Length: 434
Image (cartoon, rainbow, N blue to C red; front, side):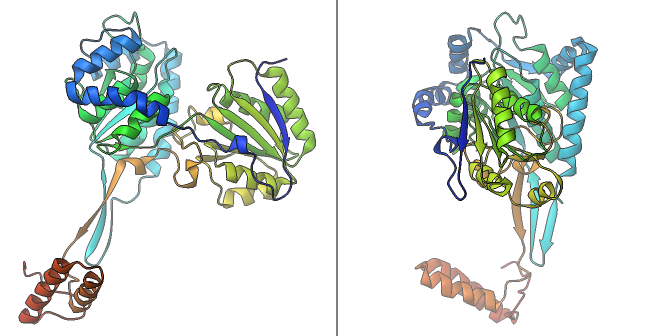
């Protein structure tokens, strides 16, 4: 018998999602702990970063910079099987992200919208007890696909790492992904260093990537001074399955995502009591300590199962549905960071294409996973070809209604100049340099 908790629930037609599946991480506690660190790094720069790195990671890093030539050396030193795996995963990610790049410019008369890349990106990749090279690939590659000018990676140093205190696997992943530099800095101090600059750590324009609650709290704190992708919490998985699903595949998907830690959650929603009981039995048998919470929810039917999963708005939504049900679900509007039809989430974590940096805590209701759009700045460029009487007079009326006298006066001045020049038609003004 496993050690992890498995809960079997039943939800009637039209009943709300059980409260324990409405998850949101409260970061206020972590913000209070992290705020002094962020402010100290902002004030004292790398001196503070070095002190916190020694305190929290047990490593004194005099210079955190690992240049690209060292990344290449780390890649060359890996066994060929690992180099091959990194190349395959990177190729799948590039194929997806480069294919999603939108046109760099759209226009209507008088205005253009230009999508310009973020110039400097800092990707945070957790290191901890285990290296996570997949996170390096899943953050750097979409930034590169968007055309970001400089992309660096920050990851915690390891004790006993010698001259380069970062896992060779992480360095190799950074090389394959196309990173310019790796910084051997982790935690809240890394986020602050990227946001404000700290000696050898250059300031960036946007910080992205997953991390523990301290890292997420730091991203929240610096978000007024630098861009961030999202404030993410523990892993979430929702599976919607019908009678056609294989119980073992469903159970293994749930166990895989619950493996991300005790705060993670994996839930099955199904209208099949037989499948629910089979999956619950497999989970009870296979689950071990250290996993997240596992829920098996029996709904009135598959439509109700989909409704409940949509309410959960989980990071991952996996569909094991047969025939027309599958197609209807894929055509529908389901709230999730990523919707996968029959694709195991463990494959999405590594090498299928979309980034595994995904919204949690219900944030999938307003955003999706990390992608090229996170690294693009939509900037409007306008000219004066449409400046004419109608637009000016309408704007004067609105300015007066809002109580902005100088707005109205500025617009009246322009209208008078157009009338004097004889160009105050309904549309179009002169390109007269006024």
